[in-house]
Image (cartoon, rainbow, N blue to C red; front, side):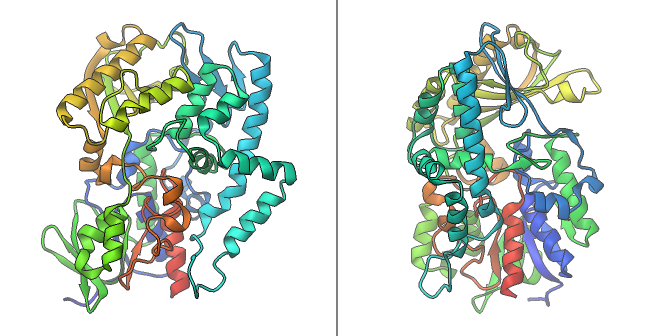
Length: 504
């Protein structure tokens, strides 16, 4: 084994890997980032908008000086209706509603929106800390949770009780208790379940929604943003900031194995056979891939191996890309908006039901973005990007499921934008198993492990290793599969770097 030429090797140049690398390099460490793909950005390439970029990361990396410009930092959402009677949610998290809507719903939504944002803000400090250790001899592990509890109690007795009630209900019932308009409930139910393996009626579906709402764009909670140049520009800006800080970045450099000698991390072996030494390795790829493939069961406790093999990582969303001859007309909706095809909260639930049994839904719900409505393409064509919920992650017939899912998505688009089918020049649909193959996300799960109550906080990614420190000395975990979860945030990477500094 050669002498280490770097203090730290980071596996994966996604937002978390780049955030961790920048933080460590700013403290004087010699850091090498290894990316399997041809460009930095990682799983951020799946996203077409931002909602939770960590403000610590954005500020410390000075991303605006490295090319990050928000095309819009407060994207509007239009809940589409087949008859053109759309509902537009303007401002952060539907601050204003445009369209024909009962006054009672406007009043109820204003109250519910404010309540959800307050509750999400109470939980938001959890995103910036390592989860407390729930173990004997862990010092005072509950301090952080106690502070969150105090913040919740400061809401007042009535609000504290309401927070408890909301956390114990499901999204469908929460919306049904407060609202009547199906377009509004459909759009909100879609948002609440986006990227998860759960429908609106699933138990404990409110907490992941609050976690999503705790994010911000350009300092505004609940806002959605689109970077100029698309999400790839965000990855490029983070890579530029990291390299300017002294980080060495190598692409097309997949890691085959983490080298462990004397039960300590000593470096990595690339797929090419090249060996690179380092005393510390940060894995910013899926924790289960890291533990079971790069480390290997022989270096791990049998119980941990069993838990890792049983971690839930079911992807339930597909990604659709269309190249179009001209701009489609969604019955008068603004093509620069985020367009939601959900119908109602019942439609979202009906889209989830068949997927639980490995089948394709007849009418998937869609989140549609048209990037070329913001930045025209040189050839005059238009590009449509859509997230389709829900899609089976392990169907019996993969090719058949992909074809059926594409047909269902195109039928939904045709219903809401008549004639769009005739505009399609090229179509690509990535099912969850395609996402797994392309981006290395187990099960095609965006969060590198389901973001569910039983896999959050001190249970994420697995009990006993929730503080970013892996069971092998010198190895750290820093992907979306770690706390606080997914999205293009960089939070897990930043938190991991902080934990490493504390550990010395």
